[in-house]
Length: 77
Image 1 (cartoon, rainbow, N blue to C red):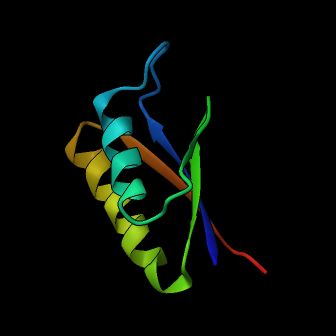
Image 2: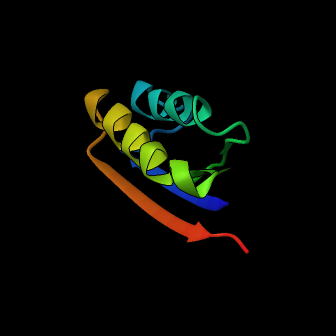
Image 3: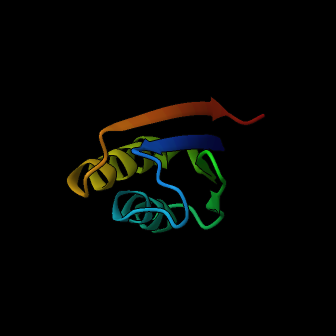
C-alpha cells in the first residue's frame, strides 16, 4: 500500500475551492479513504495505482485553477 498526502494551493479560508474539490474527487475515484484536512488531504491506495492517483490529483488540481501542488508519497509497511 502507498500513502499519498497532497496540499493544493491557493488555500482559501472557509470552504475549499474547485481546484481542491476536483483533486479530492479524482483521488476518491482511485482510493476510498480520502481524508480532507485543514492543510492538506491524504489517502491510501495499492502500490500499482500510486502513479495513477498522483497524476489524477495533479491534473485535476491544475486544470481547475491550482497554482501549486505539494505531494508526499510513502510506501506503507
